[in-house]
Image: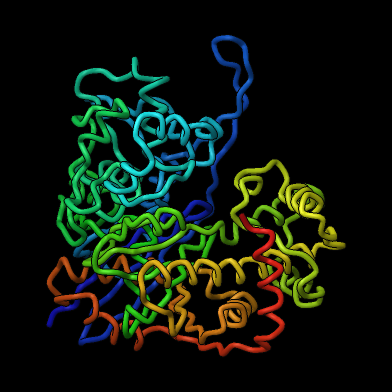
Length: 501
């Protein structure tokens, strides 16, 4: 069997990575070719009435430049030929384009405050029960339904004949090869796709004033959508590789790499800036109980991810950012870990998903305010702030697990943690302790691994994702954690539940 090489682009909300995935003689290897940091930038701009507003944008040019850097590094260090390219990204945001392919303004970031009131406006157009019954997605400020409804209310005049909309992964496929399609995993999280037909819901689009003609085609993961532009192939020194739809939503790719034996038994946590906590189920679950629990039915690869978005390590990242501003230097993660280990346990709790933590000016101030509001002792030092976040996250995972098990009727027997967050040994152990179940952590680069495996599926190297599991287990270390001290965590959970709405 010939050697097959794929290229995985993994764009997160705080950084991007490019990987070479090589399939050779029944084995799989993953090699990072490029890594870069990026973040959204806030501007303070007066509107037509002179009112100052904060606007937060992504730099799509910077992101595309780094994709090209990754491809050039692949050619220098791996090989001069490439079979396919797959792109996964965070699950929100996109860009309107003119008929000539020019961006219509900057690309807004999903934490931009223009969306703060949009859930209410969307619900006024589409009743909550109707929206959930059709799309299976619960209401979040960042949903693309909110973003496009805002655009049609405030920027509709910018749309000219032939204009079109591209979700984030589709935007970069468009830049690479002119294709305009988006895969069903990414489309599913927009709150605009019918969860059962896996096509755009025309009734929902119509009620929100979104022209169906601007939306891209939805394709299945594993679909070849086009080829790298000849000009870009020349610039990077590569062949015209296929552009392959993968699990374009990074969570879909991460879940695809979880080494799960029986999906009925497993809770999966894709751990990073966001923690996506859920189970794989065969069909969408849109019952009143699922809606009440704010569970989403996100499109998977031959299944559905019944899950909840938990704020994740965003709180820690923002604490670190605030301290960097105070100190004038960036604190090393190893130092933060030492502080956390030395801090007292269960001194206070926060709800990671409290609205005050979504995009505060200062995360430490927001946590202090939460503790005071809930009549708890304010953490005395930085290590205690960090420990409060990690313990609260683990307890929130327990709460979400109970909700998902009740709604799905499938009790959890093991927890799988995948993604960059599985490097956090303390959080992994806290999760085992809080949930009271064994935790299996790895692979670390689950999103890139899942991305590569879907490309392998599209190229015919494997017939189904279960066939990829031996390749994954052979290639990456997997770590096990057993629950400890259940009585203390049970008591902490009883307190935690009184603080979470």
